[in-house]
Length: 191
Image 1 (cartoon, one colour):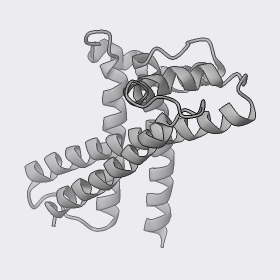
Image 2 (cartoon, helix red, strand yellow):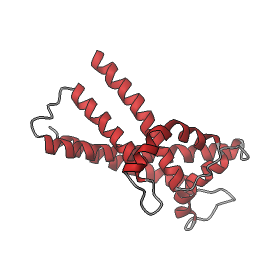
Image 3 (cartoon, helix red, strand yellow):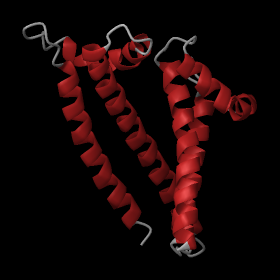
């Protein structure tokens, strides 16, 4: 019982911090406006660890690799702690276990990224109906534009209704199914 509580707390706290790091990374990558409350919050929450990490892990081609690596390391810690609490013995084959944990953390990053995009598109669609002039609208538009643009090129609006979010959501659901299958195959390597 206490192991389940500890796993829940670790997964929640480190998972939320990893989410904040991923959002910061994607906001920088997709050039989301810097001066909005969400961006400022993410910077304030993560700056204490990102700034020192930038001295060790440099950026590459304008991409903030330190923030992404920190999110991956946190996911590695979460995955490792879950397996340790479940009684998995890493000493049997430490090299294979480390590689599998690293791969599982990458899968978790991909899954979280897909959920972020999914949620942003849903919130943007709802806000466009309820309050299109919301302060969140520019942030959501900056974030979702690259994903929606792929479908907007090929699918014109029908009766002035943009169907590209629907196709992106369907694609994300398919990708989430594929990621779940990959996760199961990688996790089976630990058994």
